[in-house]
Length: 132
Picture 1: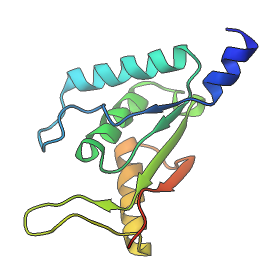
Picture 2: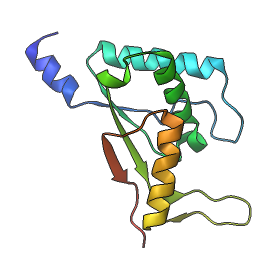
Picture 3: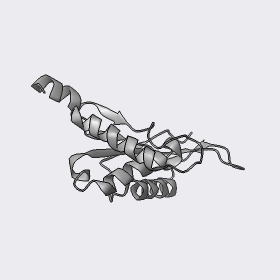
Picture 4: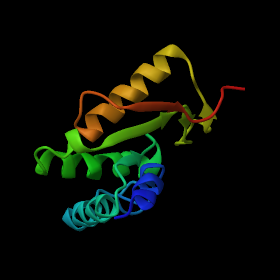
């Protein structure tokens, strides 16, 4: 890799919204974990080390399969940076979707992300959408 491509790769972020299987509430399977592992390996192979998540991606499954890969790959967490977002509440039966950046909502959503990602910290937290 040239110095120029290393610099360009250092500015790239891998968006993890596509990991974890379908958006609906079905559980993920081993195949989704394998696809996540392959995606992480390919990204790292070209120098990408920052991985972008959101608590809502694939109803949390994107973070969960990524967390499975982290749990199965000792030392991987030390080689990457994790970014996640919170603030969007998806609709569910009886509750319309809305934005919520209250202190309690942020703490709840970040703790959920940490559990799914199987880590005790994220490197970057973004507020996904402002509360109107």
